[in-house]
Structure formats: structure tokens, C-alpha cells
Image (cartoon, rainbow, N blue to C red; front, side):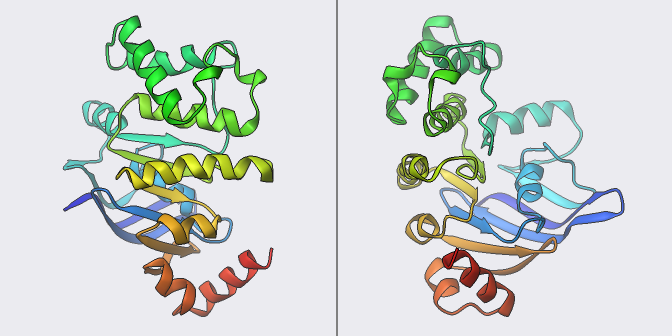
Length: 244
């Protein structure tokens, strides 16, 4: 049963076509890793899934809801789909705990006590409960990204989207974020991850999607696409990534 279904989706920015008739189904509990060169449409694709970008053609269905301009549907989708960005997007004037509580209180209607309890639960899950009373500027980049993941989890979404979550981190901080993401994947969370972290993809992805110039060029199980890529373009991409 697909929790996400994209059929012939196209997206334009002016005269530039960022997505070209993209079709992709994602099953409940599936872990999909999307990779590809810069400008291939990876981020645009996942931003269309939670309506941060509106697609022009085709259809996107998320957990039975057809994405449209309808405000009620948009609010429903935002409740179902969490997103973790390259930049952490934390409120600098709020503590970690306050950053995590604001969504559940304002959107879900939780009391302050309920929101704080939920926030601490997910800070425990990302292994930084001791940072609850600090401000974002007092944390490392890896810690800030773990806070951002916990903030998304506080909304208890059914789907988590990750847009190159480690690309803004120093190398030594990448492992700690990937560890948290791996734990989420093992727990059964439906995840779509845009990343160049091929080791992570091999470990946790059910399927790899390779995009180029707004199209899905290749899709398959990690072992199959890594060991015997069908397209020359993907073979070149993998070689460049692994030799980087």
C-alpha cells in the first residue's frame, strides 16, 4: 500500500522545468534514498510532497489525500509529513526545549506540560536530553541537526523527508546525525532522504532513486544499483562520489 504516490509530476520555475513527468510510489515504512547531481530535481521532488512547492502537472497523493491548493488539505499534509532541512532553521532566541514545544502547542493544541513531556521524549531519542535548556548557538552543528530531527518527531508525522541533512555539517559531525537517522529507519519510519551519503544508503535504503535533469533515471535496491548500475550516467555519478 503506497503512502505516497506521484504520477507524471512536473514542476516549472519560469521557463525551467525542474521535474519532468516524475512517477514514484513509496510504501508505508519504506526507506527511499534519492541521489543525483546538483540541479537534478531531488530537493524539488521532496518539497512537492509536503507542498512547500506546488506542482503544475500530474498528481501527488499522500496517505489518501490529493495535494491541491485547498488549505484544509495542506494543513492535514503538514501534519502527516515532517521535514528536516540542510540548514537547521531553529529559532535562535528560543531554547532547545522551547523550539520543540512550539509546534505541538500551536498546531496540535497540546498543553505546556504535554508538549514538554513529548519534547523530552524525542530529545532522549536523538540522544541529547542534556541540551534542553541551551540555545541553538551553544550547540555544535551535529547537535543542532539532531534538535531539528527531534522537532519534526514532536509532531509525530507518518513520513519524514530529509533534504541533504548532513551537507552543512563538518565531517566529524556527520556520523552522529546519520546514527540518529539509521535508528529512525530501523524503527519503521517512512523516510525519503536526499543525500550523497552512499554508506548510509547501502545500510538502510530499501530503494535508491537516481535523478538527473529533472527525471528519474534509475531506481532499484541499493545492492543492485551500486554493483551493476544500468545507466552510464549513474555509474559515472557513483564513481565520482566514491572517489571524492
